[in-house]
Length: 288
Image (cartoon, rainbow, N blue to C red):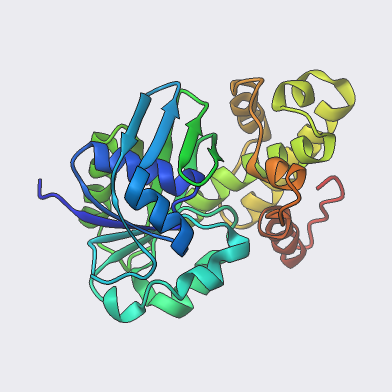
């Protein structure tokens, strides 16, 4: 297997983790970020504190503007900062690259394809990470899972190559049959968790154990599952709740942390996307 070259646009919590894990496995990685972040990463690296992979410091290259064509570009910004971040990665430098967005929600796909074309694939990541300062990433779950799919524009063997690279780096990755499945399988679960942890101000364990909040959690799951099924991804609410019940009680969400810190949350990208999709099918989502 050839070694792919990679770039990460937005080395925050998720992007910093991806970059560090790939770097540790011997993959060429370039981080693209704001000037302050690039300077810190260049001097101090990315510090990882992980319950699954231990503590280590990675030293990927860091720039403020993409200056070469990688084989793979991971886009790991927030939905709220995506348009501004895209200015740092010129489409003319990405003619042969595969672009893998790992953002929350659905609607970023249209934005990215309008800018970069058909080389954008669907991607999702299941992980709990948070950033402490500019260059420290804390990974709090014993897993990191990525799913990929393309509805025909990118050959399956190229997706499998990316999945194998991630898996070799310690990030479980697999290729699914449809883009909709990649996006909706995560969104139904994430939307329910993000909405309830953010609204309650508590970790997931409280939401699962408190009778009133658990009812809200289940309501979000049932509504999201109904929308996903209407979108062509048959989703069983009981299966989703079983997945949620298996998650650590200490789990919090990035939307919850953003609200607590006074930052703009991804409410529109997550809950808004489900509500808008539901409206297209005449499905009300009162709990969400």
